[in-house]
Image (cartoon, rainbow, N blue to C red; front, side, top):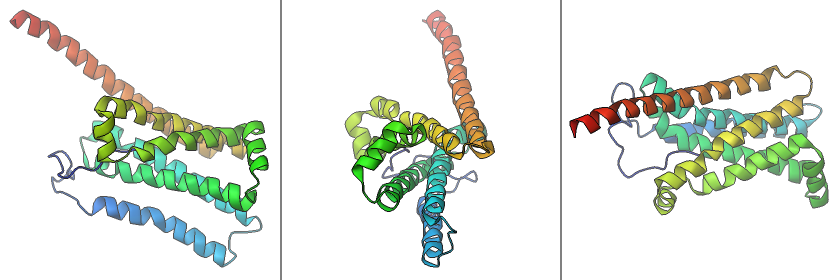
Length: 225
């Protein structure tokens, strides 16, 4: 989901101006919870429209997707701009995405389906868009559980990074879930699909450039030896 917090910030974990921003992650979490508070106030005031449950589901699901894509944008943004402060909020964004994904599913299972396990299972097995969203949630769960520095140390950096690449799979499934859900006007899910494709392209291009640079250094090193 995101880079685990460390006791001390490395030199790169600074703002573009070179200043440490210890308030940044808490501010992101606080700001990320504001939409939930607004949604709760709207629900209490009966301002969610004729189908309040559907409106709540739509808002919670969209927030989960937006935050997940934002967390995945942290590394590409650093690669393109050189700024490293996005990496400091990547974990907060990822955990917020998981939180809203859980709230989205619980609203569906508890409020919409009344905790009818049979109905929920039937929906998951018979309705592709619900299956896509449910699998995305399942993929996010181990990422949230292993987002701590202790789990990074326990798994090792290489295994931890491989595991957390599942965030991209979850995001793709989230877009599929959104796309199948809206049925008619697919403009908005296509925008998120395009954003994901751009993030993939930046990561792939960066990896290709690193491999090319490494291959150029290797012969020079062998000649020097």
